[in-house]
Image (cartoon, rainbow, N blue to C red):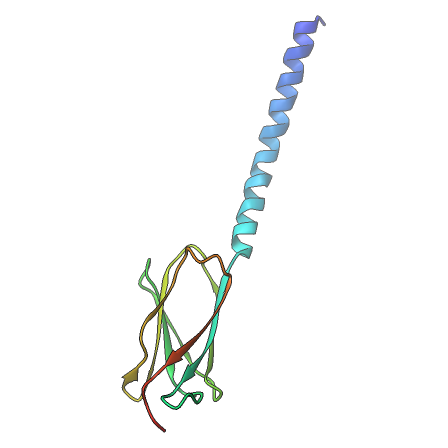
Amino acid sequence: MNRYSKFALGIAVGVGAVLAAAPRLGAQTQVAEKERVKNVTGTVMDKGEKPLGGAVVYLKNTKTLAVKSFISQDNGEFRFNALSPNVDYEIYAEFNGARSSTKTISSFDSKMNVAMTLKIDVAR
């Protein structure tokens, strides 16, 4: 085998190795992307800064317009887990006809764990 044949064989083997590894690299990238999820937690508070249990917290995906809801616990806490970090969300709470202001959770915010307080102007 002359040196040009050896060179061509070396290139062919190298290209084959890269092509064989490509599907695995793509799968690793997909797994890494799936592992990056955003979590939103917080507390619903009333006018007197007391936790408000039983409020309905709405989370709207601004891309698909899908809405998820969570009823705040007795201590006012709520949570939404495993959200896409590449989507903007709008969040607000309602209790007995009163509503908090709407807040935006931006895809440009690199924090994967977002904490917030939603205030509703009701007295109990």
